[in-house]
Image 1 (cartoon, rainbow, N blue to C red):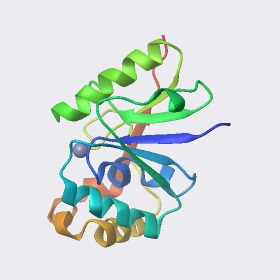
Image 2 (cartoon, rainbow, N blue to C red; image 1 turned 45 degrees about the vertical axis):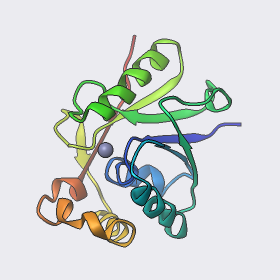
Image 3 (tube, rainbow, N blue to C red; image 1 turned 90 degrees about the vertical axis):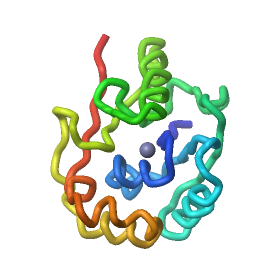
Length: 155
Ligand SMILES: [Zn+2]
């Protein structure tokens, strides 16, 4: 069976980087289990607003999800700045080289492949509902709301 998987190093990366994917597929979201418990609890709130399932894992994607039929969204290993994003990006690069269907995404919107989000109002609304504590991030910098970027590598 073909599934969509979003790897979110931190809760909020799934919406900031993949709102369009979240709202058009029924993805499984994998959060890094090392992120703070409070933020994980908040992430579970996302289930009330989006048709998703959630898994928490340490530092890898478990074998049952590593299916070449699945499309896996993972942070970009080159353009992302946060070390945890780059860590996951490197895992994604290795998987892509091994023939898995990997899509790299941007959360800082400094990548050369970003585009405008059509339903940016709905994106902002969802972020405010699920992550009200972090709203300063997108209140003062609209790039997190207005843009998303995803790319595939060809080998
Ligand atoms: Zn993050």
